[in-house]
Every structure is written in C-alpha cells, then in structure tokens.
Image (cartoon, rainbow, N blue to C red):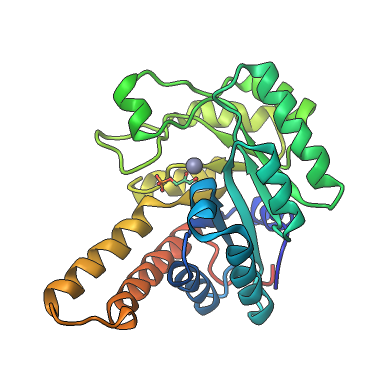
Length: 283
Ligand code: G3H
Ligand code: ZN
C-alpha cells in the first residue's frame, strides 16, 4: 500500500527503529527493494533523485513504483530525494509521490528556509510530508574540494524546523555521501543535542559503508530514516561484472540483470534487519 513519509517516520520514531530509504533509478532496483521489504514485512521508502528522474522519467518511475505499492500489503513511500528544483518537487507531489526530501542546504540559512517552506506549503495542501536539511552532508566531489565539515547547528535546527514546518530533518553530524574514504566519525553528542531541540523524526544520509555498530547507535539516538544508495549500486554493478565474466556470450538482459536484482535485494534485506524495521509493516 502507498504510505506517507510522515506516517511511517512517526511510527519508527515511536518504535525506536529506522525505516530504510533506498535509491533506485530503474525497474530492477525498485523490484529488489520492494521484494526485500515484502519478504521481511518491513515498511520501506523508495528514493528517486533528480538524476534518477532525468534518467528514467518521472511518469515512468511513479507508475511502476505506485503500481508495486498497490500490489503489496506493506507501507511503501515514494519520495523525491535531494530535490533542489521547486518545479520538479511540485511535479512529484502532483504525480502521487508520498514524500519529498528538499535540499536547499547549500544556500544561506534564510534562503534554505524560504525555499523549503515553499515546498512544505505546497505538499501539505495534499497532506504530503517534507524532509529538509540543514548543515551539509557532502558528496565525494565536494569533499575533494574542501574536506571541512559543515555540521548542523542545534539551535539553528530548532529555528529551521519551526519556520519551515518540515516533517523530518536530515542531520549533518560527520556523515557523508558515498563510501567513506577514511573512517567516518559520527558526532553522537551533537546528534543528542539536535534531538533535544526538535521533535520531528531525524534522518541519516550517506549511510553506505557506515559500520553497523554506528548505525545502531544512531538509531538509539533518534534516527528514524536511513538513506542508502552507494551500497546498492555496488551490489548491482559487482553482480553484473561477475555475470559478464561467468558467461561472456550472454546477451539477454534478463540473464544479465537478474543476478544484480538478487544482489540488491540481499543487501536491502541486511539493511532492514540492521535498522530494526523487520516485521514493522503493521505497527
Ligand atoms: O540520499 C541518499 C543518500 O544519502 C545515500 O548515501 O550513497 O552514502 O548511501 P550513500
Ligand atoms: Zn542523501
């Protein structure tokens, strides 16, 4: 069934587990994520980034994810991930997306508030929840330019949530997108301070490659949504390379991509168990 971002996250917050938000850009990956969640009776969030939408098409992505949501009895949330363009974010809401992650974190505070609040107003008219970000969860290309962390300020976070009325809040506590080059250090003292200041569910981005003990700790300190992309891409592409090596003459896309779909599914299952969302589809 389709579910709203704010509903599954509030339940996770109450139940002290985290819902996995997994990035997809094609049918195989979407099926892998949904099948893993169905097998483990877990609520799940399907993330589509602006680039994924540019690659696969908004109508196409919405059509096949929402069709799967209709087919299976678990809560499935379809979200825009790291939306920067207000026009696209509105189009996602109009297409039946059930959550929006809007990222204006690279803009000065006031502009971040203004743009995030604008999409919140639009989405809330249709009872769709919005996640915002303050501080910067950097990408590898940004880290290569400047290694300095831009962490979330707890007091500013409070003001941001109050002014924008977001339903979920993405923290920057030392986490980064991609597989960490060096050992990632998450600042749990900072996370606890943020948690004290705001009551909307907290989100951890860039969780690929983060050690399981750190993930458990993050959930203990209030993280209710965890975003995973790179680990799924790695599982997909490693399986595809293996398959091409195993049978150099295979030319049927189903033969080549089936093992990749299975590999993504296995990875998603491990994450669901780690996040504690197994058997939470009815809570
Ligand atoms: O929004 C998506 C993520 O934050 C994924 O990060 O590629 O490090 O898993 P990741
Ligand atoms: Zn992210």
